[in-house]
Image (cartoon, rainbow, N blue to C red; front, top):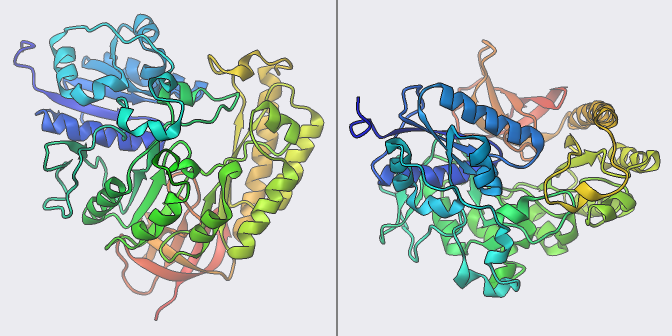
Length: 484
């Protein structure tokens, strides 16, 4: 078959976080509008890999996926964070793939036509995307560059959805999003980019400065997702607590959350990626008390030693973080809290680890992620003194991961007897009748535990049920449905 007559079929592979999932659904809508057929089988003429470039393990997974796609005989293209971050450098080391930039997303159909025809375009030269926007947040909105989730939306938005299975397109012809998977839970991006300067993180350099999406866009997308049988919205961004600062209203998230929760068909709204340094009392109040908003706090602590946190260019210490958690639980005693932590940061001492252990032991977190520090190109931390060898870092990861498992299991056990609102996602596959898998308010999809609901009556995906916790298995819970 000649390249001219080759079918325009594409297998879109998504790696990384929920933000990447939304980006892929934007790409999918644009590809569909360009006449490309999406397929998940091995016969696609092009494999488009939406890569992750966050940490070394994620980078390697992205490279492995690109190489595997090339071995299938398909044409291969790379987009996403790894492609944006390294550009021509990645293209030189990986000639099997065409490397595309965020700037190519608006013309992704045409770019894949080039890939299919063997027309190799010069890969972009990576640059610091923070320089593409004004330093002052209030000056950014009119100048928004090509940024996934922030630049593709036209000025008007549909108030109703005729065909939820079709890509969401605006009356002006703009393409928004096409869902790539079913399910009753979906991410909804509220912003892109980050203005923080954490010494270990390269994300702002390739994701760019912080840009909020306007409330009408977010609310319209929420209605579209609800019409697609979504029942829980997970709000995602690089830093959700900054939402609205470039729109002149730092309290905008507090105003938007109740409107999102009131969207017809939406049972629950969950917000992720909260910065402790920016978590205002008013936002805590709205999250903890608004009907339909999950009392769930995804807090990016990263460590508990004030000395290490200062080296990370972050806020806080053990005492301040405990005080913040006390403030949350004073308002919502059963609130769910999750966080991630880095061990092995340059200069981390035994005293620093003791501070972290004391914090974890007293914090009562529902979900704890432990990651080993790794140098990231272009970050301040990579040149700090006191670098630890990989064997030391691995030992610390192993020690704290074991502690985290124990503490999470204790926290789950402490919920015995609680009555939870559980969103049913699917029937359990354990072969036992009347058992369903769902998530309570303190359990975010993918990253936290699940609740197995035992019910004497049939349940369906999307049902929100009240259930009493009767047992726990590690971080997971077992609960009996409460019949009205």
